[in-house]
Image 1 (spheres, rainbow, N blue to C red):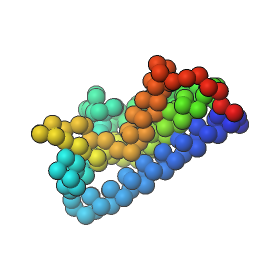
Image 2 (image 1 turned 135 degrees about the vertical axis):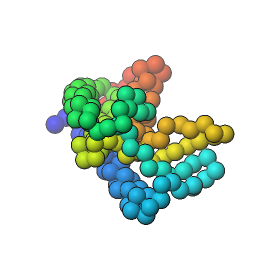
Image 3 (image 1 turned 30 degrees about the vertical axis):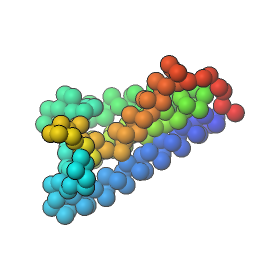
Image 4 (image 1 turned 180 degrees about the horizontal axis):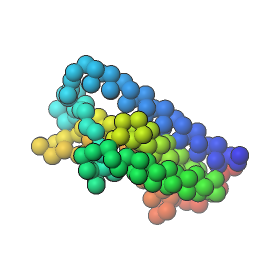
Length: 160
């Protein structure tokens, strides 16, 4: 296994573990504690949202019937990203891909386990709410931002 793949898979594993640990903690705290939501700050709540769709609830059917289809699609994408990671030539791309892969796998675990993705972070301002999200979604977002950074702004430095 080459160094790029090892480094990327390490970022994927850390993202996956952090995501699943946070989801477990929030499931216990919110659901088993019978708390539908908890105000943390005036602009931030912990909530219980089951996302049956894809990113930001797109194609949300309200049922878990499409969970295996979405999980299979995500798995195929993850395989392509791991191949890209193995052949990447710089650290920004490797880290970005690792974060995306770890986040994608974290959400696939939810789909296979619950039939939906568990989202619990809710930011809002003046009645406007960003769609609830989780640690996996954050990893995916940061990873994609790193890929865009590398594509449009970053310098091309090879990993050693």
